[in-house]
Image 1: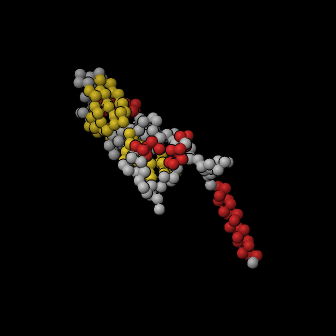
Image 2: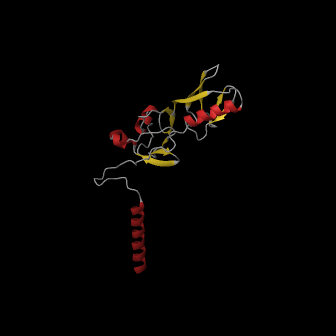
Image 3: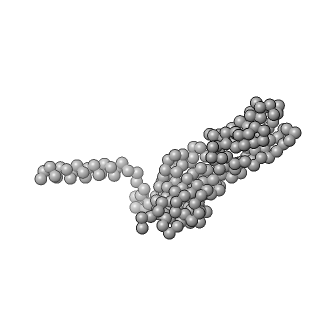
Length: 199
């Protein structure tokens, strides 16, 4: 009898310790809150899907080249072919392109500028139109769901996953829709997954 009491007491203490270590999502008033997510460390980095205009100037045949970064993180330009944009921002890519033209001796002097014209976030799962959504500085999680046509009938709206910089966070989008302060701003490259409800 004494052993069973000790076992139950031990289990209760373990459960309390586990609960104490969990991050709470409620305030003192019992109201639910969404997690606070840090701004993206890599938001300025170019990503596959980004649409760019590469301007070549200071040469006889100046041009504006509309390109898109492919799944291999590359773009293709006249004369020099494929250039990798892996891990670069637009300024770094400008320098890499300029260097490639000079090293391959197509020009002795050239100015290059890279302008990002369209960036994206990605949404999948139980929304009407899964896929990529054009990013804008005021795009939030709830707005992204609306842009994807809204939830399907089977969506689990209170367990939506936002992945940023390889970390995942769980959000209640119903709460975000009711309370704008609980609706996080999105950054280019963010990924949203809407799970299917069991019911």
